[in-house]
Image (cartoon, rainbow, N blue to C red):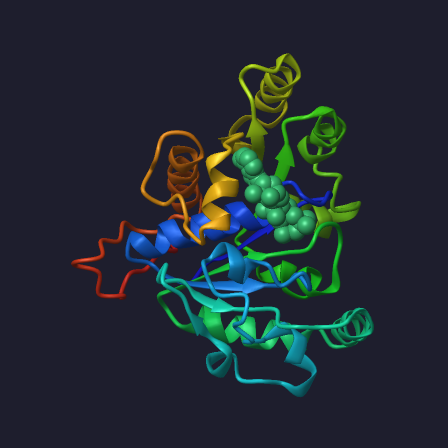
Length: 269
Ligand SMILES: Nc1ncnc2c1ncn2[C@@H]1O[C@H](COP(=O)(O)OP(=O)(O)OP(=O)(O)O)[C@@H](O)[C@H]1O
Ligand SMILES: [Mg+2]
């Protein structure tokens, strides 16, 4: 079943916000969603409405090879969360070394999650290159790159369009094939934002799979431990459209919370 990662070259662009909302929307539509946090900031749980006192952990305890099923935190959104867990900076560096030497520490449990026919695994990554995302890159069905509609993105978009941003050679361009882009914090009132959206559309074509408007309601919702999953006007509606695009892109069959039996086959022969 599909493995979908949210990533970005830069920090603070909205990866965690978007990953959490797409995961929750898919769960509401009846899919079985696992949200896997690869970021030591351990923030995905907060975006999924889990209490800051929740002490669950998965990534931070990987070197002791936990069973992923034992680490699942059930959330009100219906998404099953594998939190990063608490970790100090030295532990983060040690984990990166361990994953670089032995990617199977993470690749094996993720392969096991994907072997369960009706699981969708949604990954939230830290900004920039990192050992955890690299450990699962070969299994990715979709790499969703989140960029802001700003001048910095204007410099990155051509690299994405030419499949060069993951490095050179056949392996990099094979992964790049599965990479799509979402522009976040789009603001119609800003000429630069408008120009970046137009540029991205021209350069990326169908690989631009969504745009999310700048919406103050997101900060308020996060503070209240709520999510915009009902298609509210603004970012809520944009998240729904993005979820539609992802479902189409990874060829998931329709799922309905009432009739869903968990026996679908998403991959066409
Ligand atoms: N469309 C949006 N409109 C308004 N605010 C937004 C939007 N998207 C994200 N934000 C806000 O931007 C901040 C950063 O978002 P988020 O934490 O999701 O980014 P990130 O890419 O995961 O960051 P990091 O690289 O640190 O993991 C948050 O305060 C979030 O509420
Ligand atoms: Mg984040």
